[in-house]
Length: 186
Image (cartoon, rainbow, N blue to C red):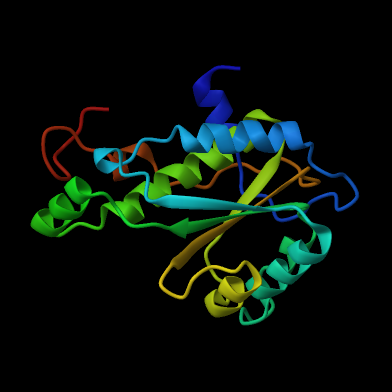
């Protein structure tokens, strides 16, 4: 499969086979792919918590759905959660971010999240990035210090959802050459 086909078949899955555990070897390859993600000034401002203990995983899933008006209940089906915690950036990234008024750590966390979901897809697994959760509860469950931010919970498992067509804006609407929203000759 070439890369365009690969990314077109990756989707956010919200239904998993709860009786099909994910092999440790696959999770190891996924977190290794994540570890290799690029970051501003090589700061690597992240810590990943793999949650695969069934009891703890269910309590983490509860933290994603407790405040969500009925959303995210699918997270309990996923056998693995990878929780992304923001760590401090290095001096160079911190100074650069201050000078440029950009939060490079947040960008870096987005990059590592993309690596995780693409690596999961390469392993034949489904995934979904969850950003809506009870952060204090997540911190307490996973012994995360109060001074750390929990940014994302990525659920991973064997999907039971069929492939859906992607609904995306047309290329001409989101890309221009040589200037913002310049005329394009597509």
